[in-house]
Image (cartoon, rainbow, N blue to C red; front, top):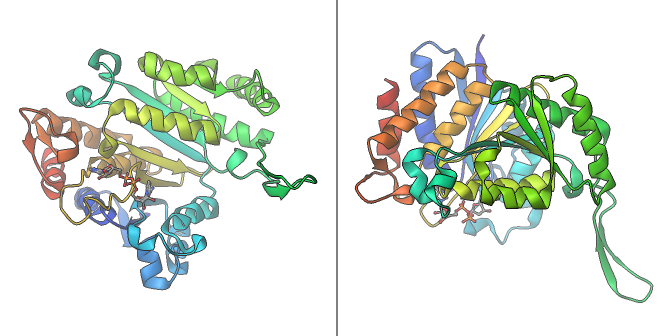
Length: 357
Ligand code: NAD
């Protein structure tokens, strides 16, 4: 079956790193995987090309695609634009237009890079956690919201943390499905001691668990989860949590690895259509210099193969090729260490390709 992949490089280093992932995709096509790639602008590039961060043609393309590979958006030249024209709006638009409610954020620390973490190597070496964050609900979207004036003239800001049963059910199912493919342990993170919405969340997680008898489900309060993540992160396999808790915990988990240029992510809809992107931004400070680390983007492509294209075999090959390149001591400046060889974006991409070949 042929797959259509939308390629959205975006801004800054997005252009350089996506080019390396596209080389890997072209290699896969040359070796028999049936897919078509179509490129389109997003973010600042969308604004430059069509006057808005999510141009109509780009939206049409992503709707007709099976998966999306995105670089990054944003840059100082766009910061003075009105809010609705800023590059980040392009991403938010994509998430809501496509109903991408499940955000998968792995925190993996290749043993070769254990020294990059600010934590002791024995605490983090070989770390492999998957955080599943609900992405389209909760307090970031709940209504009513706003800033209002009270009778005494003082202003008050307010937001609403709301989850319906079906929203909790579907995100938990995504997390249980992933746990089934991993070590079959799922930790649901909530604040059920204080929040009614968390009580409902916990109840729903237990209910879904009945359909996954092989998965061991545990619950943890979010404050404890934050502590445990820095104390002994290897206790976790898969974690599932609401939008805001996931936002915070997944960034903390990412930092355990110490290498932002290494971490991929996926955002999925109900049919496993997904958008795949590195967790980092467009890094204007190094854009155009040819030094950005392309591995997070190449690993995002591996996630695409695993979760949207049902080719876990190829995903494993890519993961292994990245491991071998690190074994050989090749490092972009962001992960450089004593005794290793410093390489640029293109050299790193080509080294991965050479391992695949
Ligand atoms: P950033 O992630 O772009 O950069 C943070 C630091 O990490 C910088 O020093 C950068 O050089 C470094 N870095 C990031 N990716 C790297 C890579 N692949 N290789 C080597 N070093 C890398 O975050 P920022 O500086 O806060 O934001 C820059 C721009 O990116 C802003 O416009 C922001 O809005 C945008 N942004 C976009 C996304 C996205 O597209 N999903 C995410 C975060 C930030």
